[in-house]
Image 1 (cartoon, rainbow, N blue to C red):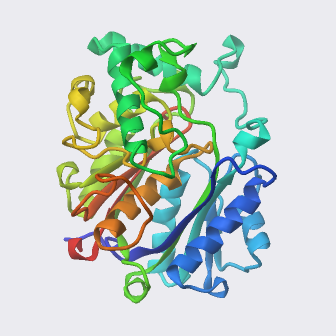
Image 2 (cartoon, rainbow, N blue to C red):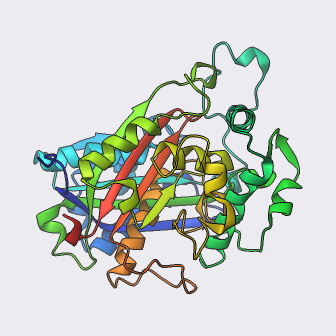
Length: 390
């Protein structure tokens, strides 16, 4: 029996704003621009927005502030923050509110000017039991997981580098990507060390940028100007907050959220035409490929070799260039979602902007977008599909 939320809502519009560098603009201004762009894309007036969902690293009450700046009085809002995966969680919450008839139109948004503002002043309280060691989080935590993975499975820095090289090859096909210059395994391995074993090119970009999507019920979405892309399945999981409390440094909660999202969707990992993963660091991609079911634990180091996740490879992973080469304004989950949706829309004939040959995946009808928050802490998986997948 199909899950009652499966396919009940769809993305009717989307937009990004200020990606890369947006000097002189703050995070709220960028977020507002993205919302207006997404509503225009959906041909839905601002006055019809009933649900506002957002999270940032710099606002105490982001949903209140965004609604105020937009000039709307929402019937439902959610500013819950579980890190970079928040926005896929917001999609699940918005789907419930839409299906219940509480709202008719939901906007989910994020914005950040971290690059031109010189970074975030503070994004988290000190972690008890860890602060005494003065970690340089989040990278110290991810480096710890990477070190354990390399030790446990015999992986190498060259294996991690394959992830960065694949992402850059996708970025080379995408004029919107921030970094498009050629990149080799040797470049990645030889880059300045940041936190062993992660060097500078194992780490995501630091950019400005905002994004927004508009969700409506399925019956309305089909009448919009863009092909609707339906939320087929979504699931959340988190097993820890501090990296020192992570039950297993090589197994993330994606091993929980992924199977439940796929079960709700009625499709498996192998059915996905594109796979969009939150690649804050190269280790993320290896862990998530395993935990989402694309290969067994410890096998991702071999799975990614030989250009398998690069353009022309067996699996289209992070087709915009990911957080490693396209855009990463501090919290990346909404960009994962937008790329998953855009690939489907492009395959359905929507004009999604220029890409080099192979940048848009022909025949894409199903995409998974997976979000990560904290220090491999919160994991949220969303499965999106075209109308024919319902």
